[in-house]
Structure formats: structure tokens, C-alpha cells
Image (cartoon, rainbow, N blue to C red; front, side, top):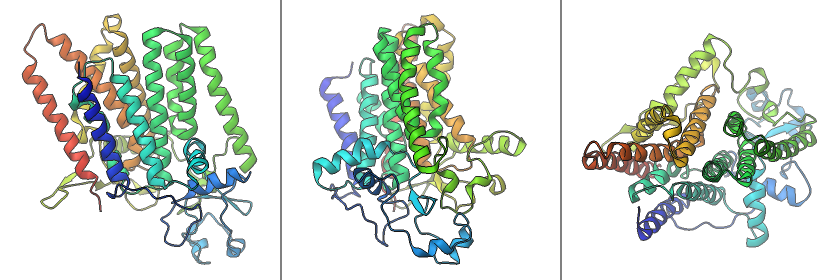
Length: 448
């Protein structure tokens, strides 16, 4: 069992890395106003603006609407906006009935921006919000592993074995939403573990709460909704009570959407200010040969897309994606990194999870929970692969979950092998692979 001080040192090291890279390597997070200025990047401070609107009793963003918008024939067409000098104005906000709205989830504004404003007297930067949610997700994952044998290397691996520090180098509303979703899914995973260990209805309900918040934060995580009934099917009362938070949060989101867009199922993406009108094609689909091939291509990106190594610092660089433009989003390419290329142990853990699944009742409660979490991670990955866009930040939806589950599966496999073979050399080799992942992830944080 990992010593207490070793655990504390590993946890503090990961949190220090988050703060270092999240603060732009300055160790400082100044408070910011909610107002935007010309130098703000794309969706920067949108969440601060949304929080300010909520405090004022409004649902739209509190930014003034330029009078030129009334003259744009099609506000959702890039060329039509460009003709009036508004091509990049309020990028990726939703424009509806002469007002701007945020199509991203309101959960981060409610859970962090508003409390910070009430306590701190100012708004947090988006970088601080992402650092907070990423730290939350990491600590919840450490709690997941605390009952399993885990070395300091594993603690460092689950904290750094993803593109988290890379994403912290440039944070806007996009990254805030993704890291908030990470925190919710990490809590969902921990609640699942507690359910497997205790069978207590309260833990099933908590799993429902965190799953509901995860889906409200990242709508693509709706794919996880199939897992809870599978896990709880033989426990009907627990399942019914676990579904109540899902219905409550889902109902609240439908009311929120109706109040903004007169449609309970409209998130705002139909009215998104982007390159092209997004009502022309669903953001995610898998219904014909072209979209099936896009699914294969996107899966390759999320699993195997390799970084580029060079002789100049920071030595590791992400490569841009390569998508099929006719059936994908028309924006410029963005960097992406496959989970297996960054952390080979996760792919090994996935194969071990399949092997352990065949043992069925022979697995302990912790391993059963890890298998469920591994299923969650792959469900999310496959769901993302049906979509029109891939980028490094989206991979955070599944990377942490997959790594946590992989660590448990690897430890279980080592324990099963121990009576039959010497595992010391194998453990050292696995530790070396983990160190490669940790070093690579840290170097990626030095993005320019």
C-alpha cells in the first residue's frame, strides 16, 4: 500500500503542475471583470458574463449587441456577417431574437463563477476555473484508487496521463466546460465504486446526481445514461431513486432551454455563430457510409494519433487532426493526441479489462467498478467519434476515466500473476512506461 506521505507528495506534485501551467507559469490567478474587450480571445470570459447575467436575473449574455447585426441577412453564415464586419464578433455564442446566449452548459457558472464572485469580490479567470475543475476531477480519482494498492507513479499517472496540462495552456469557455464535465464524471465513477462496495441506495442516488450533472455539463455524455440501468437493473428501488436526479436536472435544463430558445430541446447550437449555419447537419451522427468512415477516422485520432518529437524544447508537439472535410466541420485543423500514444498503459488496461470481464464473479468489488468505469470511457470515446470535430480538449471527456480504470485492471492482473511468475521486472517495465507518459504530458504543457 502506498505510504501516506508518498500519496500526499504525489497529489501535491500534480496539483502544483496544474497551478503552474494553468496560471501561465506565473503561479498567480488575478481576478477579472466580466466585461470583454477587443483583446479577448474567442469565448474568453463568456462564463463570467453568464454568471453576471444570472446575478442580474437574466439568461442572455450581458454584452451589448452591435446595431449592425440587424442588417445581416443570415447571422449564422460567416460570409454574411463578414460583409458587415461582424465575422468574428461573439464567436461561438448563440444569437437568437437579437440577443446573445451561451450554448455551453450553465453548470460551471453556478458551481464556481457565482460562488467565487460572491466570496472573492471579482470573477475568476477561465484558467482558474479550469484548474479548479481539473483538480477536482483528479482528487476524486485519487479517492477512487485509495483502497487499491497504488504506487506514487500511479497517482502521478492518473493526474498527468492525459492532455490536461496541455489544455490549461490556453483556456476559454470550451476548456472550462470540458474540465467541469471531467469533475462530474470523476464523481460519478467514485459513486459507482461506493455502490459496488456497499450496495447502499444512497450511493446509487449519488451516482444519479453526478451523472445528471455530467450530462448537463457535457451533453455528449448522455451516452453514459445506458450504464446506470445496466448496473442497477437487479435493484429496482435503487434504480428508481437514482433516476430521480436525472429527471430533476433534465427538467431544469429543459426549462432553461425553453426560456431562452422557446424549445426545451434546443441547446443553442442551431443558432451558433460559427463558420457555417449548424442547422444544416447534426453535430454528431452515424447513419451512412461516409459518417461510418468518419467514425473510424475519429476513433483512430482519439486512440492512436501520435505526437511529434523534435530536437528543440519542449521536444514534444501535438500534430493537427486530418478530417474528411465534406462531412466534417469546416474550421481549421486543431491539435489532437491519442490516448494510447500518450499512455500505452491505458490500452493495456483496456485489454486486461476484457480479460477480467470474462472472470465475472471472480472479480472483487473494486475491479467490478473499474470495469464499469472502463466501459464508460469507451462509450464516451465512441460517442465523440461520431461527431464532426476532434480536438485535444474533447479527449479529456474519457482520458481520466480510462486511466483510472486501467490502473486498477493492471494492478489486479499483477496480483493474479504474482503466485505464478516473478512480476518485479514487469512492474518496473510498467513503471517505466508510466514515466514516459508523465514526462510527455508535462512537456506538452510548455505549449507556445
